[in-house]
Image 1 (cartoon, one colour):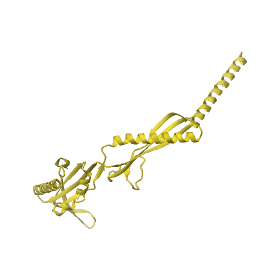
Image 2 (cartoon, one colour):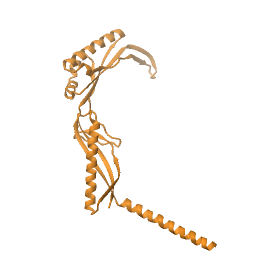
Image 3 (spheres, helix red, strand yellow):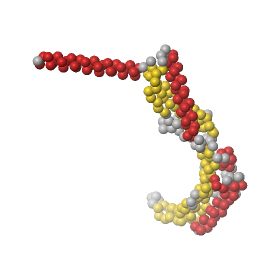
Image 4 (cartoon, rainbow, N blue to C red):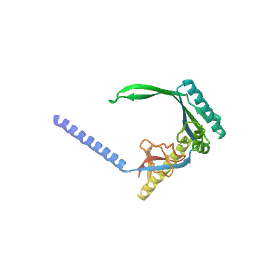
Length: 243
């Protein structure tokens, strides 16, 4: 009886081993009979939104006087921009920042021995956001005219954006998918096989760089805002079964 039971156990072990081995071979063959391709979608576009920031400063020993002088500069800046046909609703002034400034005196050992109050410094920022990209870009380059009029004005470089990125991404994903599919079909044809069903699809990161530039792509995705003319790219990876 014991010998009969041992024979049954051995037979079952052989069957189980055979099934496991057959499944492993099947999975291995499935992994070999596959095609993985990466397609690229690329679009050149021109920014349709510009954001330009600047700031202006006044300093005085008297806080009330500093406020008054800063207000005059604010009126000059607004009048200047409106004279350049910038819409009033596109001009936004921030809250005023107040800083107390001091000159410090130190001894020979570097220890501060005295602080002398030198006045109040008031700073206000201005932001212009507009779809008139070329116009605002040109005005930003003429900021020295404000300085020549007596305004202590500091201009930042404009930032360029695109308001139709969602639609652009959809177009690029479609282009990248089509490109990957064509590559897969070409590989299957050249190998004398047939392209099977799609097993998996994954999308790479969205990249935006300046056109004709040497900017590098980032693993987390690039998003250029310093150039008006840009190039956007995206990749799509497709995994197919192959017969």
